[in-house]
Amino acid sequence: MKELRYDAVVVGGGAAGMGAALELRERGFSVAIIEREECLGGILMQCIHNGFGLIEFGEELSGPEFAQRMEDRVRAAGVDAYLGTTVTEMTLGEHTPAYLRDVSSPGATLVCVSPEMGVLRISARAVVLSMGCRERNRGNIRIPGTRPSGVYTAGLAQRLVNIDGYVPGKDVVIVGSGDIGLIMARRMSWIGCKVHAVVEILPHPSGLERNIVQCLKDFGIPLYLSHLTTNIYGRDRVEGVEIAPIVNGAVDYAQARRIPCDTVLLSVGLVPENELSRNAGVELNPMTNGPWVDSGMMTNMPGVFACGNVLHVHDLVDYVVEEARRAGAFAADWLEGRRPARELRIKAGANVRYVAPAKLDPSRDNKVYLRTLVVKNDALLEVKVDNRVVRSAKKAHIQPSEMIALTLGPAELGGTGPDAAVEISIQ
Image 1 (cartoon, one colour):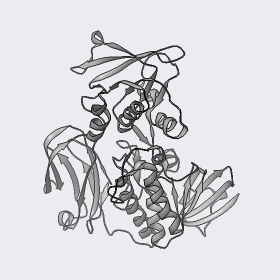
Image 2 (cartoon, helix red, strand yellow; image 1 turned 30 degrees about the horizontal axis):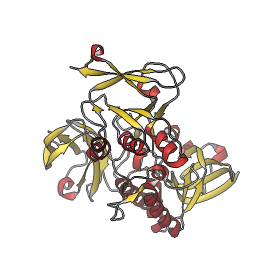
Image 3 (tube, helix red, strand yellow; image 1 turned 45 degrees about the vertical axis):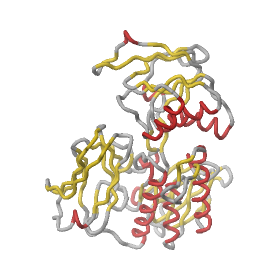
Image 4 (cartoon, helix red, strand yellow; image 1 turned 90 degrees about the horizontal axis):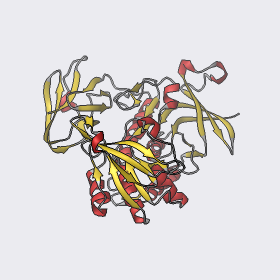
């Protein structure tokens, strides 16, 4: 078993991992990225459409172009990257078993497997989790019917088309209106397929408004809101799907209709990839399926940080890099022995699904992300400290698919007591 030591290890080499590693290296620490794919970039490598980089680079890029820009920075900074390498075990602090314990390398030990290098044992004083997320599949949403070929997640179909050069089918129905599904509706249309429908169980789209316009309306693809996919037909290959409207909260099977197709793409949500985190003892937030983190992006396990889609699902890759940069900076602070003097708890109030991070440092500015539970025009966002409104802002339009970001600092949090509680709500 080959043994390696670094100040910090970043698990995952997508946009978040590269952003965090770059910040740590720029602060003077030795850092390694562990990536199970054969190249850096993560999901960006199959996202050949544009719309990336407007914040981070000040220009519009495709996913691979964005990834290449980030990789160029990482390589120039001298970050080590172990590609084709999978972390199989992560042990932390006193939980580290005796055969892995090394008193000269406190923090974490990661056991990794690489076809090229064999088994590696990497010790680090800090770990940044940035494994991204995975797609929910048919089993997660339990669509009834037979089990023919031709049922894919939208992300898998994207990889087949954009990287492998395969066309998964000709007549397509997309279940769910998440952003990947919307983008694939356009992509399948471009390669000559017929997208017959996008079916969404909610009364509002799950993707960004710009994708609704550019991927559906511009191509005349029908969007069925408040509809449930009630069956998939076909023996060897998909032959069609059945959908039924939801009326007053109940499925109206009398109005069910069948749409012939040979391919079903599922765009029904993303789940942060946290099996490694859970097995190591990291506490997860049931609302996001990502770790609970404090004001410094650190989990309940000392020295273990999280950022990007493994923490909570983001809208834009630029926001992922922004958050990862902060996580890398906080990890560097940890390595230098600096921690906030005190922190305040923050929680989700009325009409707010979640708030991240879960704690704030009242001595500095804190970037806070949240998602709403409602679709609303002329909404009022309020921040309260011990039931006292310290910030209010009007929002012309809010919806669950669009993340809201705000900054809270000493102006709102200063002068509070040690047990003060912060709450964000939407009216």
